[in-house]
Length: 241
Image (cartoon, rainbow, N blue to C red; front, side):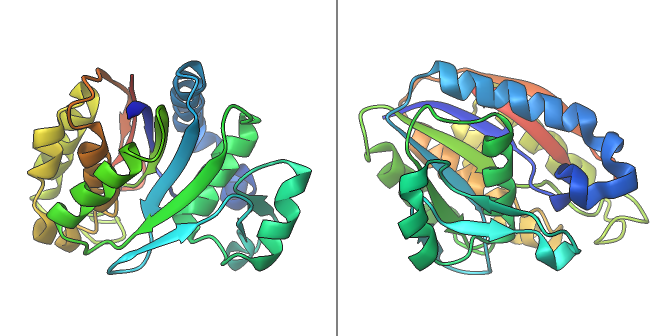
């Protein structure tokens, strides 16, 4: 059963070494993520699953100990899902973490997470809403007390200089997503249009809908801790418990 969730954005710029001179611009987002992860730890889960966008279709699982990093951004910094010595064997055999899950692993390492075993789930950005919800229900059934770290960004079309240029639909889409994340409204999350989300480059849509499926019937409350679009991309942080 799902007992808690943290929702965080996943730009590699969250990692100060990647952001370099612009690192301070996301300090508030990093602090909000730390607060959301604190709520996860307080829930005392038996299992934590990190969920983030990866590819276009389907899903992929990443066991405890899977490794990733940020060398593609010119930074020699590695991360791992799980921070204990016994994870070394898994890290040697597992697939490399996709970018979003690498950011999640970095967030966990920053808070020195040691409260429950950690696994990863990559979700295709075009995965249908119904399949996302089904994946979430499966995750919630994995253990008596399941927590999720859900990674994903809103629209990348909020300004003229945004990665996806300006789209007039972006503000409304992100406002709806922020309301749903801040109130733990699973129905509203599942109502986010997958095709519009893809056109707006909102990579968080599929992971958020996995969260919605996992949270069905859990009776969780939500708090929106951060909502900004510093680079024309919607970034949200929320805590559900």
